[in-house]
Length: 394
Image (cartoon, rainbow, N blue to C red; front, side):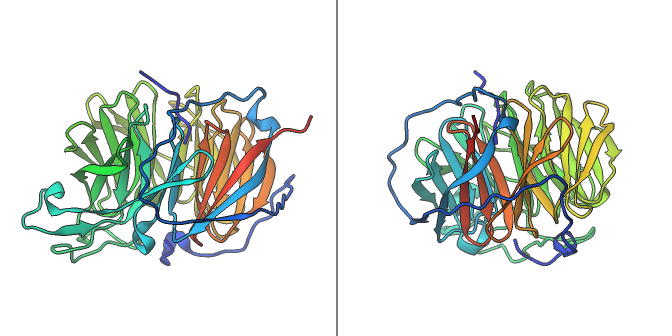
């Protein structure tokens, strides 16, 4: 996920199938690549601290071309890039751990999700295991924050799931803090049940976590790793987008088809706005913060909303089950995965016109724009990560 530098597979309502929709003005690119197998490594040799490389032309003038495929013992639910040359993949409970790569796609380390009970403030000796699902980096790339879908070990007996409803009682889970200089989990914060999306404020003060089965948003102090506020939002909150001044957060509430606005000064819910679509999942702000882009998982659409009023400006159909999206640093281009269509869409941000459609590995679920090499990374539940270069025809 690009941000400016500053000083699953369970069957559920949200994974149900329907017919694939055709996309107007789309083309398909097929590229043969060499597979690079990922292996677990304990090396702590770090790449030099890098910085984003601006494109010489608008991102919408480039096409994606697959250049690498990462395999091995991975089951990435999400893939997230820092602006300092790291990309991390979260492997859920299927293969566990956080896979760390450099910007070339070479494996650096597999960070274990097993931590001492004492780190969680739990009594007794021994360890517990997490299940990394989503992540974000601090603005300077020094730390990664990783949510765990559920925890495993003594005292954790009531695991949540994607089907949770009001009145269900599940174990609360934890947010990990990883020091990227040591590649180790250094702290954990208790959040709600089935935490999903994570985003850190650019001022380094808070980390926000949506709790899918807790129907809430956890506000975590990034320094003390204590939850300082839990804000009730309603059924199945998911995506988060935070303004660069760290004063306001937008949160998608999938089960209510709403976008919530949170004041990060008072930590209070400001408003909840009904949106035109079913199951708003992922949201991103444009770099100038004039627009909010939303994927609707069940209506198979993407919307462009005005900010701060959240007025609908444009709505288009996509292929089946649009999930995660990211935006180019210049704000001209959106990159979107369609989960059950096994495709990526590249959209022009101005009018949501489809610029390119690419077939992917099975069940693409995560996508991120890596700004050091200007590459798009795609995570597939089938156990692969695809890397795409941006190529411009002269």
